[in-house]
Image (tube, rainbow, N blue to C red; front, side, top):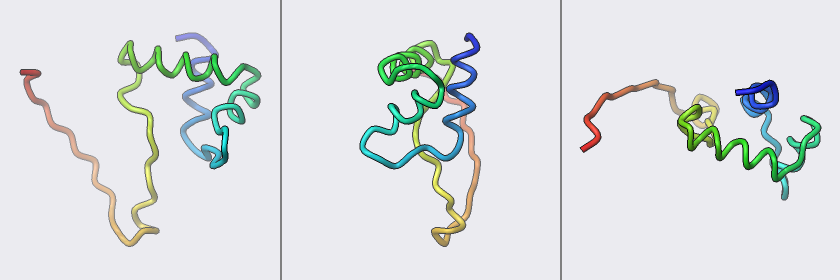
Length: 76
């Protein structure tokens, strides 16, 4: 991981833009391109530096609760 990868991870942890081209918006704030941002995210996923990239909803505001669960299973 380099400095830009760290900045990407930090930037995407909250306030992901809801618009037609959200990665372009984030890329501009990070002074890189949309293609570079998406490529780096894919590389981090491929290298298992990130386990997932997706939204986390505010369950309390939706009338629910949050629970963090983990499970270790054999691959086969």
